[in-house]
Amino acid sequence: MYHLSGVLRGTSHSEAWVVDGRVTFIPPAQKTTEVHGYVYPGLVDAHTHPGLSHKNEPVTDGEIRRRLEACRAQGVTHIREMGAQRDVAPVLRDGLPSVIRAGRHIARPMRYLRYLAVEIEPRDLPAEVVRQVERGDGWVKIVGDWIDRSDGADSDLRPLWPPEVLRDAVAAVHAAGGKVAVHTFARETIDSLLDAGVDSIEHGTGMTRDQMIEARNRGVLIDPTVRQIRTFPTIAARAGKYPRYRARMLAMNATRREHLAEFVAVGSNLVMGSDTAEDVAEGGLATELMCAAADGIPTSTIMAAASSAGRQLLGLPSWDEGAPADLVVYAKDPEADIAQVMHPAAVFLAGKRFPE
Ligand SMILES: [Zn+2]
Image 1 (cartoon, helix red, strand yellow):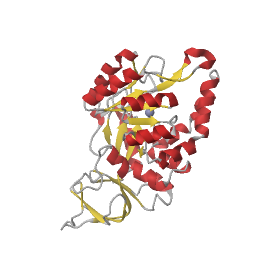
Image 2: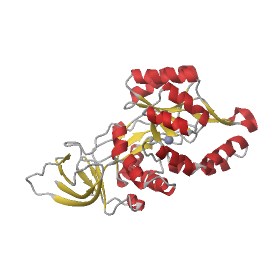
Image 3: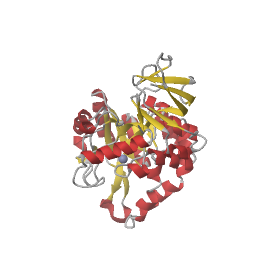
Image 4: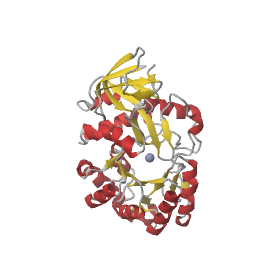
């Protein structure tokens, strides 16, 4: 049993207790261990891939466990997995972060990274999303746009799906009680996503201010994956054969800070995702939060999006009486010094403290 004091973020309470793995504001009669610091509801990595392999062979149980433990060390108690070949459910156990699974990426042949996606033709999208939603925990992941290399030097980012197919697919997922997240970099994809009623936009580098406002009004989650956008110059450097695509990726990186500021200014429904897989130990959510701060997102916005506000958007409890005690504690204030996110003093998963 623990007594939490110091600064509790995301609640007006100034102290709380962990009893039988749960949060309570009612002081227990028993003796408690003191935990003092800056306490947040456990962080959510809203876009990582513990079960994803970049090769033809699937990841092993041990590798999935290693990735999840790396998340935990960064204060992450919940993950929204945004596409993976392997179902991580059989590997999950007490002491590892909880995972909201999304089945496999859905794309068209030659229109995404090799090995990752179920590759289908547009007419099959409405049926495939239903298959994938049944494999996961309510989310599906669609690749919305990718480079179309069929156009020689004019090759560029292009939407994968006709708008009417997207509309039918999203309707099918919603009818099955699920939600749709879409990978998108390109501006010309966004209107079709908003019209179709998607629930989460991953990356969203092409969005205009009007599209951001529309997304906010519709309650669409925005996952800006700042660390990933910072790799656009690397992606561009490898795309010498495709000058249009290359120029577009470089331009989106060049306006990255202004674009992120606009997301904040319009009051976007922000969640924070690292977009990592095997690199989660070195590039995971803590790095994402550092990148977001370096690119000008206010630290209070970042920490809320990674913690209580993001949890609420994903339907997870925070400081509710009796909620599972999923928490992260920092010795110093990460909103004064964002580098604190690299070294949580303690992480609680259902009341169990790490490091033990
Ligand atoms: Zn991803």
